[in-house]
Amino acid sequence: MDYVPNRYQAAGSGIGSERHGAAPLARLVDRQQLAERMSMCRSDFSGVIETPGFPAPAGYFRGRTLWDEASVEVWLRDRRQGCLAGPEQAGEPTPGDSLAAR
Image (cartoon, rainbow, N blue to C red; front, side, top):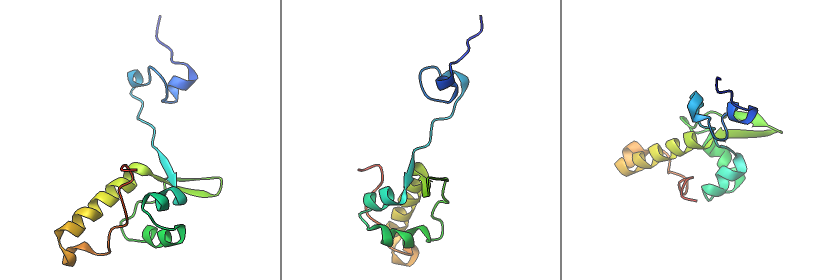
C-alpha cells in the first residue's frame, strides 16, 4: 500500500513532510516585531524598509505587511559586514541587533 500523508503532513507540517520534499515553512514577521528586534520604534523602522536592498514584503495578512524573517536576517548580516568594511563602503548605519539573537 502506498504512503498517503494526512492533510497536515501534506501542508508541510508534522511528521513525514520531509519524505515528500516539502520545503520548510517560512517564519513571517510584521513591522512591529522587526522594529522591536532592531531596538527601534515602529515609525523609525519605516525608513529602514525604504533602504535600497531591503527585502520585499513576503505577504499581507489582516492589514499587516509581513516579511520573511530569514531574508531580513540576511540583509542585516550583509549590512553589518558592509559597516565592518569601512565607512566609505558602509552606506547607512546598521540598525540594532540580529533578529536571531533575540
